Image (cartoon, rainbow, N blue to C red; front, side, top):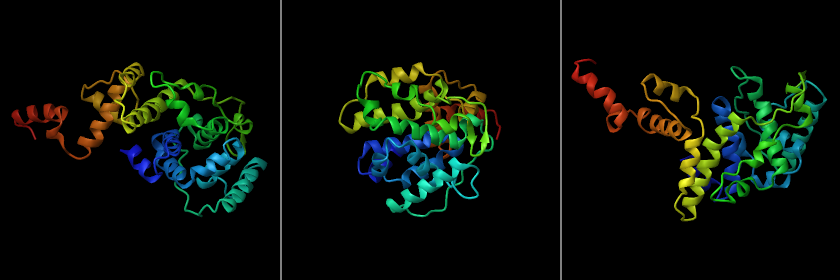
Length: 269
């Protein structure tokens, strides 16, 4: 499980693990792996030291993503590049081959530039995101995401150097649901197990109240007449696909068995 792997890598620093997991899910399916790579390269101590400097955080995130390379599109682009160069020297950050960041097949509101800007905004106003998320075991605390938008520059830009209509670009309800499914609930579940507490039944109740995630895996199961009615269902199907379908353990899975066995009885391949 990714959270357990990150806990080992970051020596049980839950705030660091929370940041990396959030970064992955801010990148969505298309850029999630690249966002994860970038987030793991930034010592969380650097985030802590710059938590209230949104430009510094944008510079770190976008610089390591390879988005601050000359020729610069405008003054802000160049300014972030200068900040990134300074921070890279100050904190001895390694030069790396930037991961591949995709803009194609994404709506502008999901562009990596906007998602990095939103994550920078989140950490520029919240010093301890994880602590805020898990402070009440009987309540799903998503309030710190509600008013998260972007810095002034990104209100009128989706990419560097290309103006657009000015919008706040706050985190949408549907995106917050994705973060809840893929970050908040798994973190709370893992933390409760870590401290020796039985995971709260409330976690499962919350997951059942959230709409199912929409992705190719869930759509694939729908074609087999297996319908997800909640986020709990869709997460179960994703786990099923990862741990059984992808590993070709069809006969160890009740769904796979029900599909394959009648087929064999009918003499079909």
